[in-house]
Length: 241
Image (cartoon, rainbow, N blue to C red; front, top):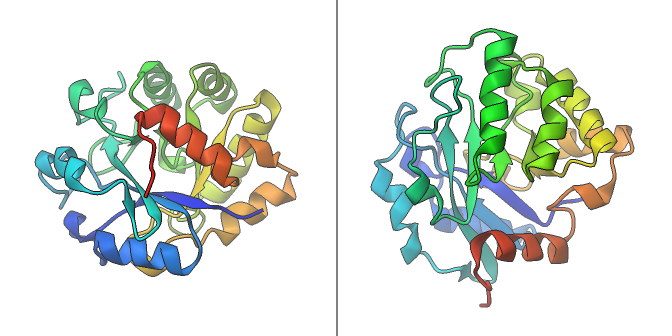
């Protein structure tokens, strides 16, 4: 299995990443990816850009040098009610919305509090992807929540960064993936790249999925035609160069 798109990437706009959008696109093209999503951190996290960075992505071409560029955001969960730091009005105008819990924006609580927040995210029609949800610091009731993600059409991210930088995430991601397999919940395999040369590098995530015989058809970015149809459905764009 391999990926055709990386839908969780960051740029120098967030002050803790090291590449520009054009550098990200160039690297994606070099390694044969067909698409990326520009999902910069939303304003509540340290060093994130002003909100106009997120909304002004409309000036970015849909396709750059043959690579589809989805205009997105990694929004921050602010409380156990699942509120995000980007308004519904702004989220509705984006192609790809990831919602993630970060300790910069939300102090970890109890498993029950985390579970409530994730159930609330499942109800949000503007959220496309549940970001790096294997984070042990925000552990929730996987068996209760994962089927709800499926029913509400959410895509669960298998985040390759988590295997290295978030202790406990490898085991949690495997448990989450097994439940996604059991309940037919779609996943997306991403890097969470903060440097261009990280884009597309997802060996640990793919190895884990292959170890549990995860169905390729449930990986939304494992097939370009499937991914393009999804991107068109979510964005209303055609993505023609």
